[in-house]
Length: 225
Image (cartoon, rainbow, N blue to C red):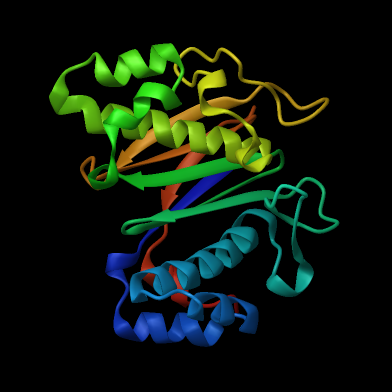
């Protein structure tokens, strides 16, 4: 079973944020401090806490049990931990983390940030028609659905920006390839969140299925003890 965990940062209190900062590693605090805006610093802190929570919850791994490194394209991964995969994303009010035993990719986006006109020239022809040829009232939802699925797929592959977005279709599956030799074909999934204010999408093999779960602030700040 592959798992996608979601946190709504608007539910965190000032005390919760202070606790997360105290629990964060020095590296995570330093990384968060580089952001100019408070919201970005908070999402960074929550991402670190959610990853730690997810790895304990799904793989029984505590922070002292692993080292985070990156592949040559920049995708974060666990060093010397085959069979333990993760991916993070954050936008708007949400932070998400996907974990599994095979490569995974996840993305979350707010519909308020949708730019449907970008579908022309960036998406595959069928995706462009789906976004721009449908009802105008649905353009933001349709664009965000395609965009998050594409982001999730490229993050699943772990090849950075080397994969042209118009060379594959997340609607038909044309052009989708496994993340590596011997890895089953990927599957794509998406859900709206907060009454369709945003969309979370994820990609992986997940032969045993997927689950999307919300993590309450109390669970996140409870620590790993």
